[in-house]
Length: 113
Image 1 (cartoon, rainbow, N blue to C red):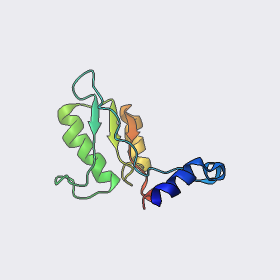
Image 2 (cartoon, helix red, strand yellow; image 1 turned 135 degrees about the horizontal axis):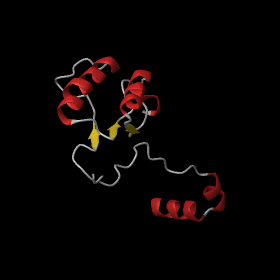
Image 3 (cartoon, rainbow, N blue to C red; image 1 turned 30 degrees about the vertical axis):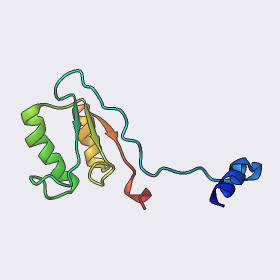
C-alpha cells in the first residue's frame, strides 16, 4: 500500500506544486580543497582543542596570533564553522588586519534544530 501512495503522490499535479522540497539542513562537505602551497588554508574548530579552553573570540584571536600565525605564518584562508567566536566583530577585524579571507561552513546556531 505504501508503494501505491508513493506512486499517487509522485504523479499528482497538485502534490507536485504544493509539496515542500525535502530540505537538507546540513550543508554538503564539498570537495577536498587542494592548496597551492603549505599553510595557504587553515581549517579551525576549537571544540576539542585543549590549548584554547576559553572559547571567547579574544582568546581564539590570541591563540591564532601567538601559536599559529607566529609559528606557521598567516594563511590566506581560514575555514571555520559559524561559532560565535568566528562571526564576532573582533574576529572579522582580525581577518581584515591580516588580509585573510574567512570561509564559513555549516549552519549558524540559530538555524540548527
